[in-house]
Each structure stands twice: as structure tokens, then as C-alpha cells.
Length: 301
Image 1 (cartoon, one colour):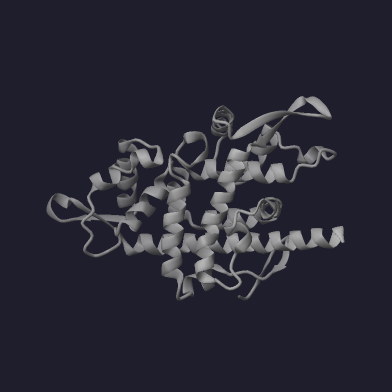
Image 2 (cartoon, one colour; image 1 turned 30 degrees about the horizontal axis):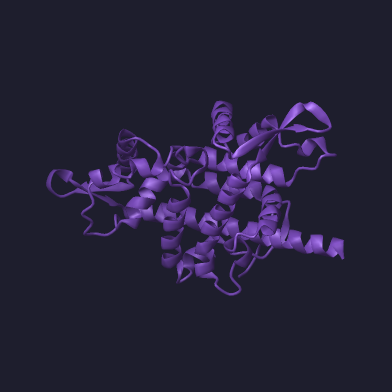
């Protein structure tokens, strides 16, 4: 794999979106990405028992990152609610009110704990429970499964094996890649609605997984509405997602009374770019985490 230079983090050898899209194994990686993403975002898996969207997924990732970067002697690293809101705001997907309600729900469901800061008992720190950290490791393993299909040698052993030490290094390293991740997400403007609307991306990915991009697709709207409880949304919400997808040329209807729905080549191209960009950022963060672990090992020697 050739590398690229990412501002602020130096030259890192990692796969680019263009290389991923051109890889002969990309169709197989795409199938893995779709199935694994759907699995970790299901109602029974996703933290807080909410449906997944970019705001909540980003909030979870940043909670883990700030916990990993916490240094008691450095007030700037204290993982407070205010620090969380300031960081999530950079991504542009979650309002302060959404973060407040999501954090409260995470505390209620045992995914997050509020702990007193020893150096200042007026401050409460956001500490992910082992329940949330376990989901984050599962999330990492899911994302790196698709990359491993593309690059099996040497593969992505630490995240695929749910290694807690690698998880901490990954979380600390991801902060350096935030700007690149934000740029990637907002460069895919056509799918911003589907990222920010609860479970919208997963519903369309599920349609794809069901064969919804095939010319002879016979999938009906009712088949997708049945996914509502799986992804913690209402049936009317699923219908709204499909209506917006049709408006944006991501979906067409055909057959008697337009009963059948089918994803368009336009959708496939847009989501392939998003998947390739996501995998490239995952590979970048993986390389940063390996570098971080190597630096730690040298310091300890």
C-alpha cells in the first residue's frame, strides 16, 4: 500500500480510498462492511438502546477516546460533559441537547459512569463502563473485518481479536485523525442526511444486503418496514427514509403499482465512496495506533 501525508500527523503508510475502490476484493469487503455494520448497530447491540446515527456513534467514539487520553494532572484532558460537547460539535452531527439525552441514557443503561474528579470534587468525569468498552471493541472488530478481506497479510489482528491494549492505543491515536475523519464524512454530501437520520444508513444498507441493487429485485416496502424493531425505529420512520432516498435518486420503484423498490447505480457509487473513505480512515487510525504502541514500548525499554 502506498501512503499519503495527513496534516498534523506526518507521513503514514495506509490505504487510500482510491486504492480500496480499485481493489479486486472490494465487492467482498463491501458485503462484510454491510453485514458487520448492521450487526453492531442493531437495537439489541447499540449502546443506550437507541437507534444509531452519526451523532450518537460519534459521541460514543469520543467518549472512549477522551477516557483513553485522560491524564489526572492535565485538566485539559479531563473527560467532562463540556469537553465531550465541544469535541462532538466539530463533527457537526449532534446538538448539545442530543448529547445530554444520550449521555443520560448511557448512564441509565449502565454504559457510562459519572465519577468525581479527585483533584476537584466539583467535576464529574464521563467514564465508559466495561459494557461500553466491550461494544467499542466489537465495533472495531466489525470495521476491520472488511479491511482484512482486502489486506489479509499481515491482516488486522489486534482489533479483530478485541485486544484491550490495542483499543486504548487506537482511542488515543484516533484524536489525531479527527480532522481527516470529519473531512471524509462531509466530503460525501449526498449521504449526509442518511448519516444523521436515525438508522437511515443501516436501513439502506440492509436493502442492499437483501439484494436491493439487483435488476430483478422483488423487494417491497413492507419488507423494509419489518426492519423497524431491529434498528429501534418506527415503521413510519422507515417509510420516510425510503421516500427521501427516492427523492434523491437513491431508490426507484417498479412493477405493478410501483410495488418493488430497487437501489440505483447512483446510490451504489455514493455509498461505495463512503465505504472506501471509512475504511481508509480506519486503516490510518490502525497505523497510528501501531506507531503509538511502538513508541510506548521504546519508552518503557
